[in-house]
Length: 118
Image 1 (cartoon, one colour):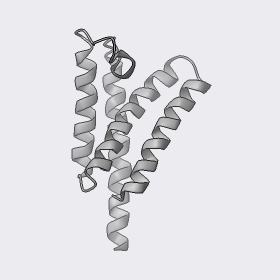
Image 2 (cartoon, rainbow, N blue to C red; image 1 turned 30 degrees about the vertical axis):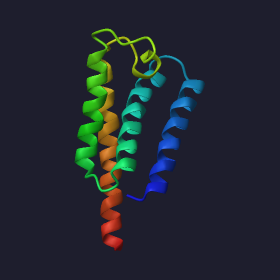
Image 3 (cartoon, rainbow, N blue to C red; image 1 turned 45 degrees about the vertical axis):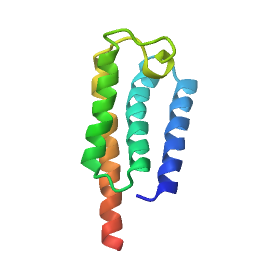
Image 4 (cartoon, helix red, strand yellow; image 1 turned 90 degrees about the horizontal axis):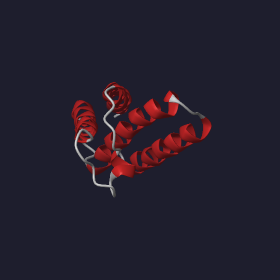
């Protein structure tokens, strides 16, 4: 994947997360934020390793998100709580998987379209 569009995608994901938080209250921004958190990890992975296969990027991004969530069962240092959170919430695991799956689907389709054109 080309790096410039991937970098722009990272910025769009962050903007979407901030926008959702600004526009809605309740569970919508919380769970959308979970999916977007995993999407950002996915996009950063693709930015770092442009040739990563979609299924690998999905597995790594979901796995890292889950690892961070399970780490919340213990003590997260105060400095990292704004980024990593502090409270384990089981439904978050589902939304991380949703984020990874949607990214996998988009990435897989983009790669297929690129292969058809080239």
